[in-house]
Image 1 (cartoon, rainbow, N blue to C red):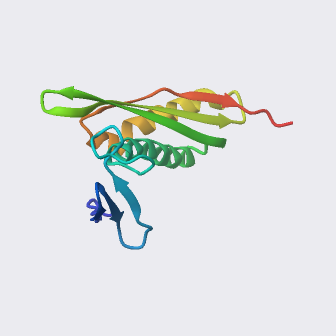
Image 2 (image 1 turned 180 degrees about the horizontal axis):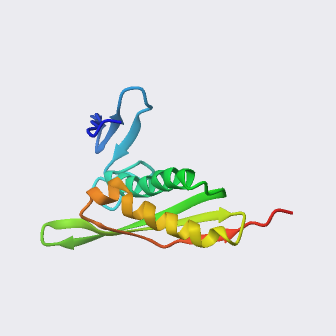
Length: 147
């Protein structure tokens, strides 16, 4: 695998404060100013949602890679994330993102291992490491007993 990766996107304005985010070979995403801002639109992805989502997705994909290499068997991974935006010296900025991953494992003995793998994923998530925003996780691991 190369040490340099380049990603290309294009944005095309459509109307009002809306546009389309595109990249070759993938579906377009409708994007807009969020509803909290003047002229914002509800129910459309905003840069703010995508920013928080990027950290959340990266945690998941990093965890999946580490879990696979560690031979961790689990039944489910879900998460929610919350980004806090505040007015600072340079204007509005994200000051914190908290990700709430929930993993379901099959054995009590995998709970601590899963927590450690999630913490490792947090440490090595390249998106979070590229942000100046503080990113933390609040982990929940549960055990599903086979009947």
